[in-house]
Length: 254
Length: 256
Image (cartoon, rainbow over all chains, first blue to last red; front, side, top):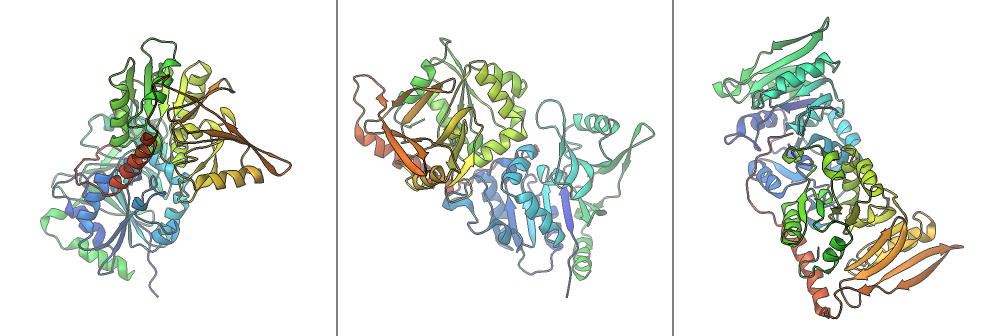
């Protein structure tokens, strides 16, 4: 019997919701599952379940996947996507794709509906968890949410024992904010540009992939009172390398 | 915010001391939908007030802190939607404490549906599908159930919860009915629609004691046509249905 290892693909930004030709990171995620027609469920909670976001998700995935979504704002109406039990639906997926938006609001709503426990279980069972921005921050122990006013230290679901900062290149203030938080004792972690994704096997960073030639990701940590930033090796998916597919097979066989 | 009937909203404006009250709309329970925000501006934009909204999904739009914004208001108006999500998001952003503080300072707190029940000890929500009792902020004693006429499946759940003691006794309000509390005392019951009513229900020795409360019809001598009621309800349900048929607008979510 094949057992699946926990996997998370945390996008610093990008994928179908942000990149015009944003298929590379999404394709990379799909390459990690072995089924021919993957079951993929979208959680647009961080956007307030914005309709246009849901539509774009289906546009992107419904041709190749069994696509569904869960709206936690409209569970009383037919348009909620999934009417059955949330846990059994989510635990039958190959991929759970979390959309961007406000991570604080999203985590609050998730906890109110018991999704934090369900997602933890999904991860342990080897369902691939992924998403950009808020859909990245949420998996970490701590995150920098610079959504409003002063940057805020946010506690995530804690599946990954690190901190996370997204849109590292797109929003110039983020570097200083993140360094200062790590300097103040935030746990060490990863800063990620738009278009770049961290791929974790269990809690170990297995690979960093990018849809852009110049996409970067960094490990940021404090040593002896000083904050250090080290660039990580990034595989560009644009070079035509077959690597993502190969990795997908390796993982599926693991 | 009844589409064709401004009576309750005008009434809310009269409760503030200021001539041009600052009124803040919180569409949180809907997920900050554009539909709700537009409806708010359509109603209050042309009136004698300073109207704005705050999105807890797009806080980046604010130029000051949430605390400064909330505490500067004369009126905070809360939209309907998911009561469970509303309270969870407020808690996550520490807004519940701010609203209680605003209330103590004399800010008028108003709201519809989830935005009405949230102030009480409890209400009946359909946030997870079927109606179920749920705790609110508890500024007001007792419980409230809404849409007693418009969404009749809520009322029996509320009544049985009150009988069982899961919810304290309280009020059931029809669509178009407003309860005004000064401090924790019910001072007035008003209505924008003829025929709409409210009831006070308590469980006494396991039995429900129900009193009908006859609201004062707003709008003075101006008769509100009774059919407006049904049209409004139908319109609201239609908008809900339309929202489900999603449109294909594109939007970029780049903030987290």
